[in-house]
Length: 272
Image 1 (tube, rainbow, N blue to C red):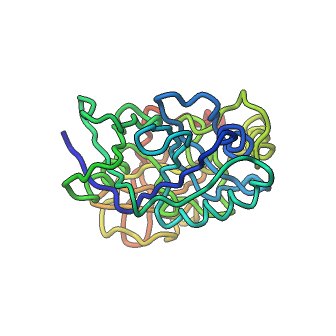
Image 2 (cartoon, one colour; image 1 turned 120 degrees about the horizontal axis):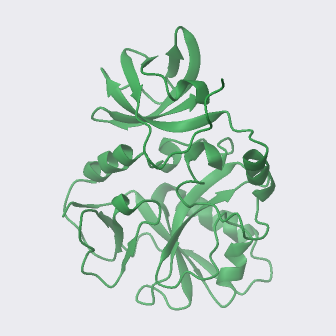
C-alpha cells in the first residue's frame, strides 16, 4: 500500500463547547455532525474569494472536545489569526498543533490499521489521512497521486483572495454544503453557481516537454486561454477558460499540455 509523510501539512485545533457552531458560520462545508468522518472545506474572504482550505475531523485521541483542521502547514498561522478575529464571545480556543502531530497519507485498496485515520472525503481513490504516525516514503509520491486525480494543492494551484471555489472543483469534490445556512463568502459562491457565471476551471493536464513554471501563459491558436499551476513528472494542473478545457492540445512555454478531464469533473455543455 503506497504511503508518504506529508511534512507540508499542519493541524489547527478549534476546541471548546462552541467549536461546531463557531466554524459553521465561517467555512464552506457542514461541520455540525462530523462524527468519525471528515469534511473538506474552505475559508473565504467576505467577498467570497478563497483564502485557504482544510480537511476537518474529530479525534478523541488527539484532542477531546475539538475539531482539527488539516491545512497547509505554511497556512496554519494564517488560519489561527483569521479564525481568532471572529471568535468574539464564542467558547472556543484556537491553537496551532502542527509541531506536535505528524500528518501522512495512505492510498490503495485497503484502509490503514490506525485509530486515527480518516478517509479523504474528496474522492475514494484519494485514500486516507493518518495522524500521529511516522510514515516512510517520499512526499513527492503523494504529490504525483494528487495531480493524477486532479486535486488542488492549496497555494500551489489557487490564488489567495482571487480564486472562486467552483473554479477549483469544490462543488464536485464535496467541499461546499449548498443546503447549509450562511457562511462567510457564501453569497458569491451561490451566485456563481446559480447564475452560471463560471468562466474558468482548474483542469488536470498531461505535460509533454519541460514543466512550465507556475503562471506561465497557456495558449490556444496563439490566444491566451489560461495559466499553468502545479506539476510534476508529466502531470500538472492548469487554470483554463472553459472553451480550452476540451481542446486536444495547448501550448505553454516550451511544452504541450493535453487536458485530462477526470470522470468526477462536470463542465457546462459546449456552446452550439
